[in-house]
Image (tube, rainbow, N blue to C red):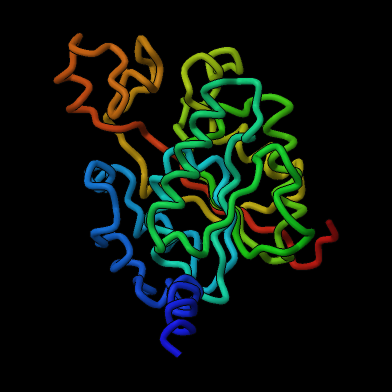
Length: 265
């Protein structure tokens, strides 16, 4: 009997790992499981207000597009519980680009390091993302500038297809001034709201609402090294460091799209 229990207990723990973590969003944000340096960004990224605006619930199946080092993953993994699932669409594991492979490997190591991530799955960003009409919400944070061009069309198209009718697509992105050219957007890392909305509508989404929760009126969006001039990157290092720390993180649009209920993928 002892041998059977010894075998079963680790399995039962993994199957029920989500029961040990917060199903309350505020509790997930306040969790000690978050990386301390990540919590310092809360004042700029407003995770409670942002996820509440997107209507995220703890029993949803959610895709996070391009989660990077897992800033939002730490919160979502702690919050999502059965029957919900968090799917991280990360860089392809076999990418020709070394940075992408390293980023994916580091993320996989992070996910395997804590039972909190027991309901997290990983798929390739350059894939269909999942079965047709299988997820409740898709989220992406500060990634559109990396996808400008055909890649953005591909990702938005796959996002539309994988969402259930009525499913939501939440977008946070560095906000360029109206009229900013594509060339400047690609160089600066800032994207106009107009462009983001146009691409989403092109692929069938309807715009439900916008929010200023992640706005920063101090950010002029015209810095020497683009958005990377500001924290947390501070690309200029000690040059005008206090000036950019005072500005804080970038001005951001927060957009909520929905796949129409009557839509056919």
